[in-house]
Structure formats: structure tokens, C-alpha cells
Length: 313
Image (tube, rainbow, N blue to C red; front, side, top):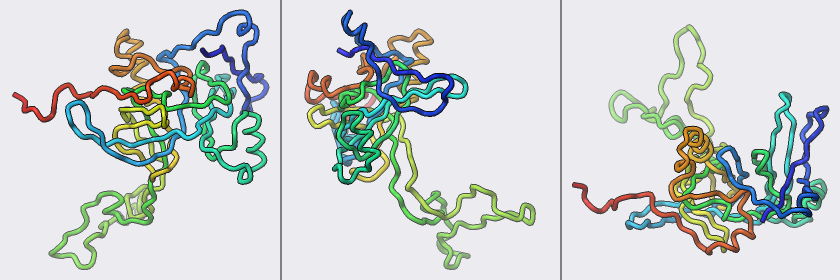
């Protein structure tokens, strides 16, 4: 059971960004039993930091093969709850997550003090996830793979693999010039890039040769097909940007989870608020304690309704 947590609010006189620990309402905690927070379509949960362990294949109930990417949570803990007052007097709420333990001797003194205040060991990666006011997580909480429910959709953010300086054919999928007649030593050239005397220059943003990859990429709407609560593994269908063992940010899909839930709730389609087969989401987060109460491995049912190997009439 979760206790009632209330993020501290800054005075309107100060608009600077502040990191603070959540405060417990001691009076309610002592006088009455704690209430369990419930997820609503207007709630935005925190994301997690995971490591991309590689890709493999799985087979669904009909025997159809599909690719999956294995993501692993590695000592993912909450280090701070953030509340900031914007210029328009609206509040910005976020949860700061850190992952992967590191030696104290390789950590700066500033970060050592920050981790000590949160009561967690030093971490290698620290990221921040915007949330709603009701989705703050107690500082020191350890997140697990049970944060995601098989059957839901997630967005994965990571830096793509750098390809170096590449030509127009590889970078922008240009066709290139002719391979036989009329072209000499310029078969993979981009062709003409300029215009006439007016404008007399190349327009900004022109697709030309240049550095490829190494950018922040978001892969949207990946289907969670399986979770392993013993090894903290999350299996998502499809590919994820980044190299193996790279750190990735995983959060609820903005389009197929958050926006679609709010849209169906407003239209009264309550059975379509969550994806098919998903009854509820762990709120405010899927913790290590929650994972111990669940089966070691949970697999989502296949989204196929018919077998691909049976001919259609």
C-alpha cells in the first residue's frame, strides 16, 4: 500500500527550479489507513532508464515469428521529485530517475551529496521524466519491469548509432546518377544542388552529404509483449535506436496510451481507454515490492485474430 504523498510547493515569489524530496502527510498517515492511488486517463506516469541488451525473436500463439528487443532495468531508483513554478503560474512536475550503480571514487562530490540525500548509492545515469501532480514517487523507490504491463505501448528514446560522414545515397536514399551511359566517375553523386543566379545560393536544409546518425531518436508505439520480473527484462516488439548495452529511456506511449486514453475517456468509450487486455497500470509506478507479488514471467496475448498460415477463403 502506498502512503499519501504531497510534493512541496514553491512560493510564487521564486521562479527558479528546485529539487526537493516529497513530504509525507504525517497526520493522515497516523490517523487513518493509507489510500492506494489509482491511474486515470489524465495521469502521466514516470518513465524508466533501461539498457538495450540486444534483439532476438519470439513466436506468437499461431507460430508466427516476430522480432523483439530486450531491455533491462539496472538498479533504477528515484532520486528526487521536482516541482517548478512557470511564468504563467502553472506548475511543472517531474520525477528524477537514476540507474546503474557506480563506484564512489569516480563520482563527483556534488553528485555524491545528491545521492546521499536521496539515500541511494551513486549512479551512472540521471534523467528526468515529466509527470502529473498525482504521479510523484517516493524518493528511494526502486522501479522494476512490472512498471509496464504486457499489452501496452511504450516510446523508447535513445541516441542512434553514428554512421560518420556519408553521401547523399546512403544518408537520404537518393537514386544516384546513371550507371552506364552519359556519366563518368559520378555514379553516386547527389546531382545538381543549386538554382539559377536568383537566389544564387543553396537553400538551408538542402539534403546533401553530411554526418549521419548519432542523434536523439524516439521510436513510438512499441508493443510490450513480455516482462521478466526475476531479471527485470522488458521485451518490446520491433527495433530500438542505439547500440547494445546503451542506455534508453522508456515511457508510456504518448499517442497510443496517453492521448488515446484521454480521447476515449472524453467520448465515453471507457472500454477503449486502455489497450485490449490491459485492465490497469501500476500507479504511481511499478516497484520492486510489486514485482515480488507477480508471476516471474508475464506474456501478452497475441494481437493476431487469425493464423497467417491458414489460407483465407
